[in-house]
Length: 366
Image (cartoon, rainbow, N blue to C red; front, side):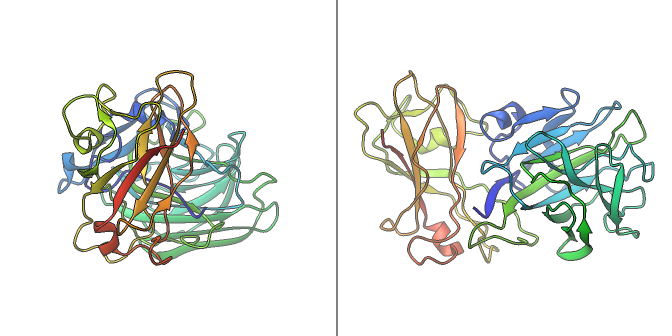
């Protein structure tokens, strides 16, 4: 692994559009707090607005609200989270046990390892313990502002006595903490959400998240700070070789590019399985200069209890293929994804030109 997941692309409808319920179809694990306090909305930046959907979390009661992402590889010692954060207002209170997480690291039992929060003056603090009972460190001076997107990246190495946490804002290190007591259990989940906690109503600001990237240090590529990157959604835009059967019409790419997904229309692969279906993808923006990874994503399901495996692959040239996991699918519509860090042609990171020439393959292997 290295890059684990990426979500909420800037200036785009993303994977879900406004259908935040789809987030729990195989990707995010749970909502926490009051129903409706964590949703997908238009970008608060007026220059983007309805062109982009972002995750919003707020606490209009005394209850913590947010979304929780289980790491698919299980508990991991070192985990990084990068994202853009927009706060409609800075918190009205200062440090206290009511400060909850904007970015939270959780164990497999959903207990806190540590978390990042923002103080009333725009300083960033890192704390541990349920409700933030132990303050680990703070920038002291302001590093974020209200009503602006700031890129925040946080790297945590969990250790019972020698834990480490580094926080960067817009690419600059603002907090570097060492010798932290972070418990005996590694990070297994990431939480994004509001700040209210412990029966205090002081903070009712709106917190928005986009350009999310989650990573660890277990692979050869993308295994450290990613920098102030953006997430981009590349949709299917052409049938290269369809082979599967569309439920309506004669093309497949315009079925797969629906946002949010429309489960009443689909492409089907019967038994015996047909040849793979290959699709062209939209291009990257012209100002992209490097690529951290590609994440092919498919929403798949089977119609009965029999065996069915689906495999996704990417190619930059129609010859060399980077094949993902050959995985069994369920009878419920579920998102599955792989991560491709390097081009199968060069064994080096994907270039923008290769991405613009890339095709996506979906193959029923069983």
